Length: 114
Length: 112
Image (cartoon, rainbow over all chains, first blue to last red; front, top):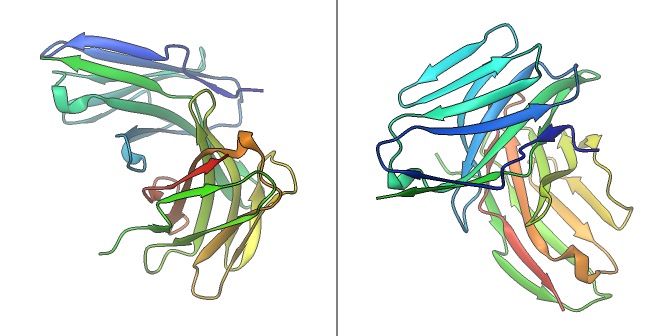
């Protein structure tokens, strides 16, 4: 049962344009969402997060939007740069007992073409 | 500060053998989580340790086990290896905050 879904395995955009990566979740108990970026042969690195009490969070070129009613979030990268080419993982966190656990999607490979 | 260190980086094992992977967390981080990454499945949660106790567990068979030592270093063991266990195994440490996870570079396990 895939509780966090990234339905696009890959996305290709031109340098300077907007990249939009999408993520859907099914578990209503998730209340905190994160995006991680992963280069080959490296571990994932934290990019940006959003709490369920917000619908938008911005950090430089990266913005995450959350639509709770649709159980959908998206990551916007503007403008896209070739160095952004990586696998992007969406993750969701919910309380399990007294602590939290991250559940990841399968990832989307973003390729930014010069 | 030093990051999360995973050893070894690469490992080749034969079916039926067992393997132990090691993870040294960031100093001060008491939570260590393990994930398996395969091309078709993304990052799947194995288990989490906090202060030497397993606090969360994923849906993996009992062949996958782990432990955490008093210095927060963690080991993961896989017994009776199967070809399908070939994957990148990632460890993440956290000061027990929601966005405080820092991942290591992983151990690439190949079972032949």
